[in-house]
Image (cartoon, rainbow over all chains, first blue to last red):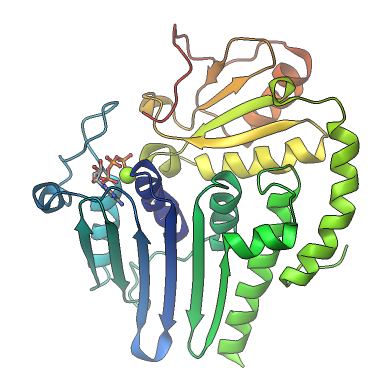
Length: 184
Length: 132
Ligand SMILES: Nc1ncnc2c1ncn2[C@@H]1O[C@H](COP(=O)(O)OP(=O)(O)OP(=O)(O)O)[C@@H](O)[C@H]1O
Ligand SMILES: [Mg+2]
């Protein structure tokens, strides 16, 4: 993957396939402590302890179109290369929590990429899933969720044409502000 | 155009949008929409599916084409990612492989607008492929 936003898009597909109805994505940046944390939590089908144990091994997948699952091992590798880690907790029938820690100062740390685009794309293309997104940089935080957006759109469906660019702009202008706040 | 920075801004923008959409959608059932699925498994995303999906969502809207763009799991053509499935109203779905923005532009202008075939169709005898 070219950047972390694409990893997040990919990991969220696992939650979608696991039939989650609520998916939370949280990003925390703490430059002072050289810390970048990403959490993805869902209320999908979860994994059995046996599957969970095998899941970091690139030869594990439950998909039928190809034998090898790559999404989780790739992200784990990219986290560990920076001196960070990846951790998964999952309960069958309850859901899955994924936690990734990276060290942003490390030369191998991938850039964030187009997080606003990824968030807007997920929200607009899965209108029946309740997404919660939050991004914290130092003391400042931006948060947005599917229900809030639905309310603001007042009946106009999230997947109707022209809505995606608006939501992307809403998210990206707020994320830009977080960055500026951090520098100032 | 004013920048959308808050939910309140979004609400305002929505009013102007609504009229545009009402006009377009008169007499339109979803059966008459172009339906596009972008394969978004790890293999697709790693080879650029997100950029293609974004291009399609923005350009179809700008060019006034009524379409629904959705994501789907791996369609099983990992060697030809990014792949997309395009279903024109009343036609069988067609799968295109190795789609980048230029190919997507071709697909919009030639296949979607005029029904002309373009390169990169993956031959298949399939029932429409949904998630896995
Ligand atoms: N959030 C989740 N809920 C339930 N099961 C999960 C979740 N995430 C991963 N899994 C299980 O772990 C397996 C491995 O996931 P991984 O993303 O590594 O590969 P994949 O999704 O199978 O294929 P790929 O990501 O390469 O397209 C999945 O097939 C699925 O069974
Ligand atoms: Mg996956």
